[in-house]
Length: 105
Image (cartoon, rainbow, N blue to C red):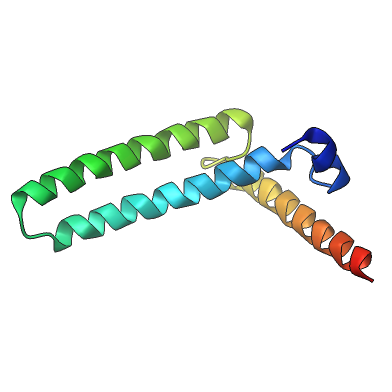
């Protein structure tokens, strides 16, 4: 997203963090879904394919997690710091909603 548009919307540099967080959540869902699918599959060939996909999904999750940690978006080993990040994101979302509501009136 263009930095000017981000500033106009009150988002600053939050866009990358929001996208990365959404991607991480999706990757976690993918890992879970592949694991469940493996347990529900009857044929060894399909289980093998799903295991390969599961391994790829885990690797993707690892890459996203490493990116988010490097950028300071995710603090899995420091809950206090993660709480600060989450509260900041919540405040930004509330401010955006308020700005949108005020613009509508």
